[in-house]
Length: 84
Image 1 (cartoon, one colour):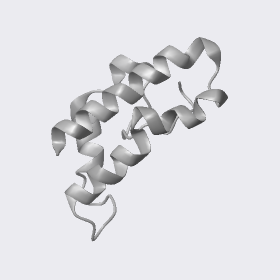
Image 2: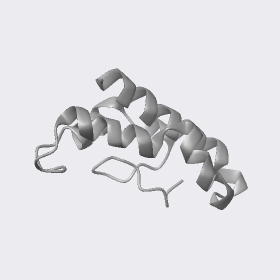
Image 3: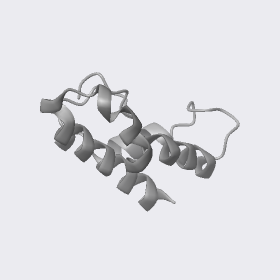
């Protein structure tokens, strides 16, 4: 879980650390992808953290961390969908 580049400014230790505020602050930060609209940043984030696409790297995730990673990806995807 800790090796995943989660979209937050501070490194989360568990899925419960991935809050909507943290994720929204990261994607809506004016210094994130200067010149790109908020909507385009959120869409790019959804492409990266969509649960179906994220499964491609699931084989590289340790078995004991798989459920936490899946939960984290789901949280990120839900927050990004809500931001659209």
